[in-house]
Image (cartoon, rainbow, N blue to C red; front, top):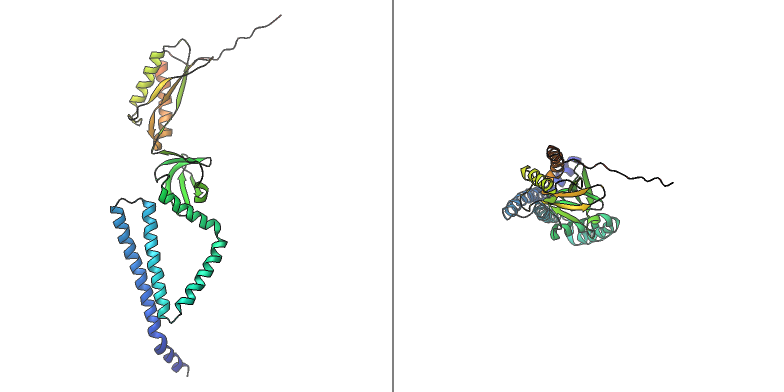
Length: 263
């Protein structure tokens, strides 16, 4: 009796289940193939990685949703009530995950408006670093100490953002005595910056007297470098500049204070 029932169920529903499995498998394969094809086409059009990834995922999701609908229809489900139920459930899920949805909306805003790109150096919310990933929910920065900073996208949109791009100007300063030969000091600073291969030639370094103080004369040395070279160049220039000034007999002034004793 049980064997007859199983055979009857297989005859009645077997082809429907087999057809549903075939439809789902075909949907998975089609989503992968069309996703790779879309990715190659967008790559040839030099579309940015975050935008390319978003469009590929959207195409794959649409194909999979279509395959699932066809599969359910193959199994005999009524599609219209199911779609209505999904809509009601989606509304409840939307209220439950407002923070997640706000991150997604903010991520789309960042991807489409492009306030910054992967590889640029940005500063906001008291943190700074190189942008290594822009995702729908968050943006990942690499700090100069090689730690990762993950920022929810809703925290980025609407905030003041400082985008350094791929180059930045570093600010160095040396203080020399009032009686020092300024021409020699400025010449030494130019020699040091021009000799460093990591210093950019365009735009040229800004070198000149920045401030007059009681202790001495402050000379500013502000070259342009790539963001990834900023820390390295700053240490190299300071070391070579100190050595260059010492060879020319120019040293940092010694702070002095005059104390007068009354009565």
